[in-house]
Image (cartoon, rainbow, N blue to C red; front, side):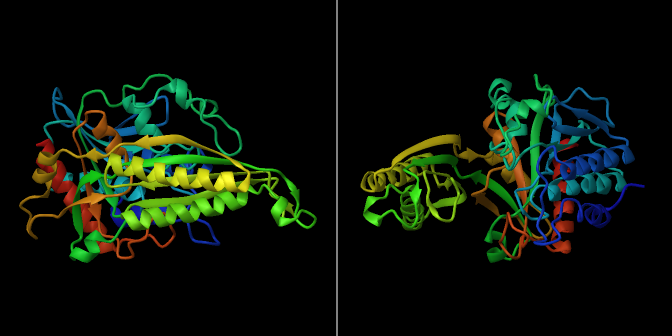
Length: 396
């Protein structure tokens, strides 16, 4: 008998969890993430679902009770995490998908089209630096020629850990629905457990390289320095100020220095800037303003600055008719339709022409990408029921 939601969740809880912080380290193709993938295969086998995998590590477990011939419905999410992340971002959608199929089977519901549970790989970009890498490759949004050259922090190339090639995993898919923990407080403020996505804000990741001159921290006069750390510090402050005054988002979350010595003026600083905005124009304007202020500071500091866009995803507008169909006419009233500032595989599929939708489960803390990420069991179970109802609407 397949495990119910709470039993499945308990099985996943210790996998990849840090004893110190309580956060999760489930980076792609590491022992923890591979253990999760083995669990995925076990859950599929327990339900007699057929598992397909593409050359990049994406997997789908198919429920095919009918004669076939109709377009396929895909649900699911991802199993990887950010560094020191929360338990819910990603796995909640996969666990809820299996549990939703159990709900439907228990009620005797038989879909007239195949229904698949997806687990996309490297959604977070935490190892190879490109968010939603698995779904980008599965949809053709990113080519294998580009992806295979991506490298992790240890220098391992993506092409060294997967076979690569061409994916046909999404052939015949007519719709994708992703359930996800909300990464914010919109549902908390509304007092609602379930929401439906309307759109995803544009999102860009930029590498900022600042070069100066290494020197002795004690013997080098302040006025004689070409210190890239000063340029970086001003750039981080500028990003914060410009995002605040425009109502957008700008974050420096990763920093590397060389030679990384306590008693040296650094020769180089590399930092990564994450920017999200309401529209594509807002995104471009914010990045341009931050870059201009950084270049002006670099000129004063005697440093050089280069900004490189590593990935930029435009605004995603989910299918409005599909969202309305999913959100309307429930026992507790229509589910709210809300925007999200976080990127998701559903956004990649939508941008590539697959009608897509998202369900959000309330997060009482509003915190995500952190060990404090949370969802109450009652809300998770409401999410399972919501996904089961959505599957029934779309697949029967």
